[in-house]
Amino acid sequence: MKLSDYEKSILAGDFGEEAQKILDVMVKIYEINGADDFVEVKEVMLASTQNMTISGTLGMDFLTRLADSGIRFRTKTVTDPVSMDIEAWQRLGISSEFARLQEKAIRALINLGVVPTWTCIPYLSGSIHRYGEHLAYVETSVVCFANSYFGARTNREMDITAMAAAITGRTPRYGLHLVDNREGQLLVNVKVDLNTTSDYDVLGHCVGKIAGTRIPVFKNMRGDSSTQALMQLGAALATTGAVPLFHIQGLTPDILFDPEKYGRRRIEEEVTITKGEMETAYDELNTTRSSEIDFVAIGCPHCTIEKIRKVAASLDGKRIKEGVEVWICTSRTMRDLGLAGGEIQTIEKAGAKVVVDTCMVNAPVNQMGFHTMATDSAKSKFYVSGSGIGVRFGDTGKCLQAALTGRWEE
Ligand code: F3S
Image 1 (cartoon, rainbow, N blue to C red):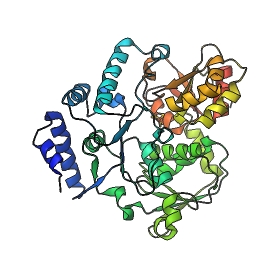
Image 2: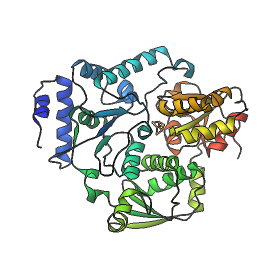
Image 3: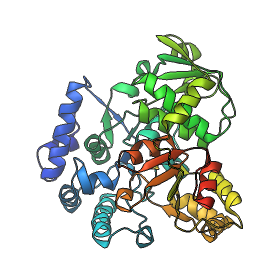
Image 4: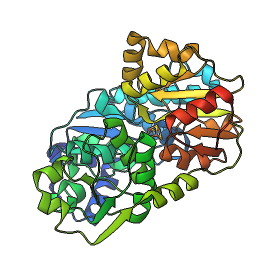
């Protein structure tokens, strides 16, 4: 590989053992993938602190030593949500022992140079990208969104390779950084109306299972799909499948730029999604028949201000049922807009909690004694059900109704 003098000095150990190890692993991984040069990245997104403090490759001690070594990120770097609301973790029932560990990881990340957005919708906090710009992102829904919505170019990075990109400002040129690897492979004929953002979740759930790692091309989809709807679609595609990029005919930039190349040339299969497939998927997303709800979680990916406004309008003047915990998860940026507009006050007055910096997947909800969660997100269903909590899946209105009554209506 063609390494810069700076990268060579890191490999020689001039910036400490931790940086040396990260770059060493990165070079080996990329040699396996056949890359022999690099692209400059405009932005990097690292994994959640959950990976760093609990189970990931980059453990807490390693992260602290890296920050203490004096090395600093060379390019703008953000992270996935952390595992608690940094300012209000106590009211989520998080233990002080857990919070101290999170604070240590957060301090190390800030010392390394992270921009503290702590969200999976960084594009609504300044991470706006031009068509063709190179990135190195970890979080799967953001990878899918940045590739598809902006036409930016990022692979699904691992914790360690994203850290290497943050340190060097570069990532090896392979995978989705090469235009020929961005061509659609699975044509999806959408023969069903998509009326709610949860319908986009369900569509993503169905198609992700069929696509696997292939790139889907959607046809007959509405041209006025909202940003929130496309966020939900990408998050679900990247959950049941390992889809890093999708194209929508007449809507997303790669396919608008060259419909033949991205939409037709490499198609190897065509599938049709009808009302029947959608109903089956809605069923699959409900992991329990229990109608008693004690946890309602909205905001995976994090809520846009438009969604916060809808939630506030639905809860205005009403009261959450006693014993039901309700989290509306969003970024600090969206929360601050909602505070200025009064929506956050309306939501909190009803008894729900507007939660920032974290989400129902990254926070330790499995330690909070919940039995059944209502959610409007296929991705959060996938991860939360893995921790043993029963899940009821439906559109946002249905989840909020369950918050008010404590019951899931069939
Ligand atoms: Fe975001 Fe957490 Fe969902 S990081 S995409 S809200 S799992």
